[in-house]
Image 1 (tube, rainbow over the protein chains, first blue to last red):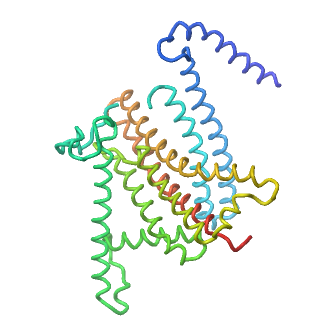
Image 2: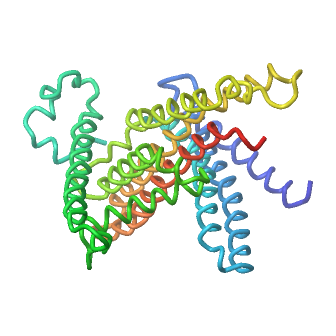
Length: 106
Length: 250
């Protein structure tokens, strides 16, 4: 592990451990999750958006490179790129739906 | 989040008494059926006007009937829409004959989902595609179409295709492939549902934070998302049907 990854992991663990007493004091009322629902919701949409963002960035970059090499194929490349973006977007939407379910909206 | 729509002004809709089978228990979805019928009415009126305009143009006979009108007319819009949809289907199917054969499915999906998404941008209307039931009904229709067509065109070979290339892996491959196939309507409906609900929620939260007209920028994103999601739903269903009926090239 590089030093940056190790530092990030340490910071996240410290944050979770510090917030655990606050979560325990906060909501023991409904359900037995003890307040971790919020963390789950945040992680769900956060990680989903991270993955989708990385994938879509790569797709967009290769689409732009393809159009730059062959401007005549712009229409076809654009169509396929939009389909790819929408499929990756849907994975992020699944994460959003899980997050909303945990936040109690649905 | 209580939703209010213009349809609640019609007596009987808001308390569920006008439409038999819709009860107060599903209070968050009382507006779905009226809005859905309204959209079908809009599309039917457009189709009737277009048919009449095309019949009037055809009555001219000879080469004069192919001349398009100048400016924007119902006939021009209908011709452009149908041509674009056939080209979309032809790009996936390969042959124009197949594209025209599946044009009812393609056209219905695209037009219904597009009008439904766009109607959500107008204040006082909620898109029926923001409800999971409508989306699942559309996705189920697509599921039935591609399975039945796959069985009809390919016969038992359609099921053999699910078993994968290698014989001794067939049980595992069959389970994996059929789960993937069963997940298709779920993913189609969830994608549309999530996109439209997320858009609506972003607009709602933005309106709480920022005064009056600034949240309208989110409506621009909503416009973009509406078109893209209608296009993606239609294209994915066309791809599923094309995958199911493709048999020659292996």
